[in-house]
Every structure is written in structure tokens, then in C-alpha cells.
Image (cartoon, rainbow, N blue to C red; front, side, top):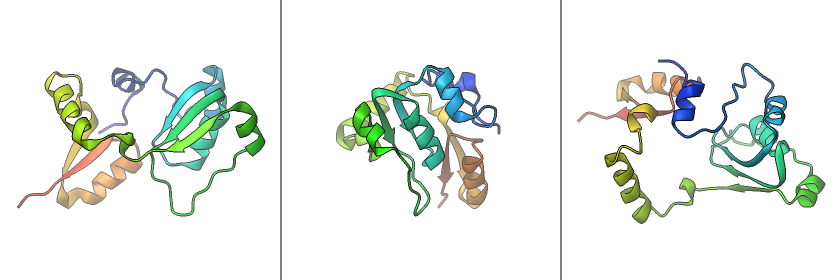
Amino acid sequence: MSAPSGSRRRALGATEVVDNAQAELGAALKRLGGLTLAFDNTGRPEVIEAAYNALHPRGRIVLAGLSARGASLTLDLNRLMASGRSLRGTIEGDADPRTFIPRLVDWYRRGELPLEQIVTTYPFEQINEAAADMLAGRVIKPVLRMMP
């Protein structure tokens, strides 16, 4: 398994891809011209802070990644207030499961949700490998199969 490539991420909807291992994140985001909208699923304070600092005035960042216990952010509160930026959390993408799950199924059936490119399955016995692959960025969404 390999880390999802930039071209694969673009095929899945990303408009830009920054490899944090190849470039300093803050500088790379500034080279892109800054951000209007940002979505973080890393939960890593240094990534969130870099994205926040790259936001244009009135830009928004939404946090969906689980952070380590006790993790915190350092933000310039005057910059937050004066720029009109917003930072918010989301639970399950703020979706209503009664309407969203049928929509996901419909997208999948129409070929608009390429789960085979997003999901990597593992037998339950490989739970440690699945976790390691996820943490190393080798897979997007590890799913454990539990056999009876």
C-alpha cells in the first residue's frame, strides 16, 4: 500500500494538494494564495494553525479530525476578531443520517462515490496494521472486517 498520491486526491475532489513532508506547510499555503475555506481532518494543532493563518478575511475552517487528548491551539484572538475568520467543529459532517445515508448509497450506485479508492479493508486480526497504515497516511479509510 502507498500513500494516496496528489493525483489520486485530486480525482477524489481536492483542488490543491500540499505534501507537508516536502514543503513547509505555512509557506506552501501562502504560495497557493491563501485559503477561503479549509477543512481539517488531521486533528493536528500545527496543521490547523497553519490553515487558520492562511485564511483570507472572512475565511472559514472546519475541524473534523480528532486531536490528541489535551491538544490546544494558539491563535491571535485580535486577528480572529478583526479579520472575521471563523473556526468551528463538526460532528459527522453536520449530516442528518436519515437523509444523508440514502444519498451516499445513491451516489455509490451511480458511480459518484468511489469507495474502492477510499476504503481499505483488513481482517480484524490485522487491527494494528490498519491503525499503523492510517497513522502513516498509507490509507485513507481503514475498515476492519469481523468474521463470525
